[in-house]
Image (cartoon, rainbow, N blue to C red; front, side):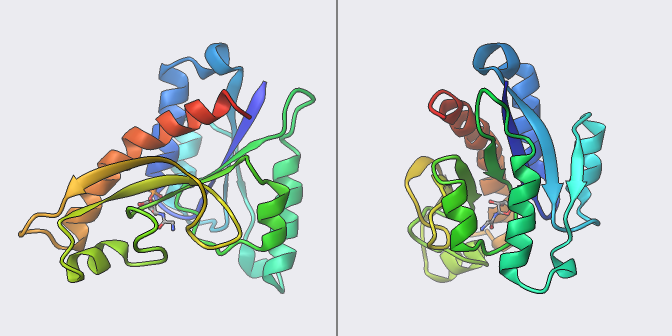
Length: 197
Ligand code: GAR
């Protein structure tokens, strides 16, 4: 079995879309893969309760309990590595995990660390993507699934979805329209990756 570990910090809706796709599409039979754990750096993340409702194993690793970014990432690496199986190393899926990752963490999981970002990368890396796209006068926005490299919100693109920006949009209406597309492309991209890791 290939284990998938999903890292979250917030509402966990992308985590839910992946977990539900795994069940609905029978990833255990198709890809010999399963969501083995959902890990949050915040104990109060609503996505943790959602994960438990979905019957998933959850863990909390509070970044505030560590003196440095390096120490937190080292502990997180140890925690994730527990889910490696003799058949395969764990696939690590960032789903609204709002942490800047150290180069050591990224290189440890190279090629099996994937992220979703709410913009059409390489445009609008970082935060407040929707407001920035509106302010720039963009006519289209979207989301990108990419392999994670040491540079924030960069790396080989695995999937994208495009949505129009409407004259009536504000950041929250645009975010909601993009999020719907995130829920469509992220499970598809993860499933594809499972064939190659
Ligand atoms: C999603 O829109 C995701 O693209 C974004 O956070 C949201 C998490 O929502 N991620 C980033 O901005 C990463 N740079 P969710 O917790 O409901 O999946």
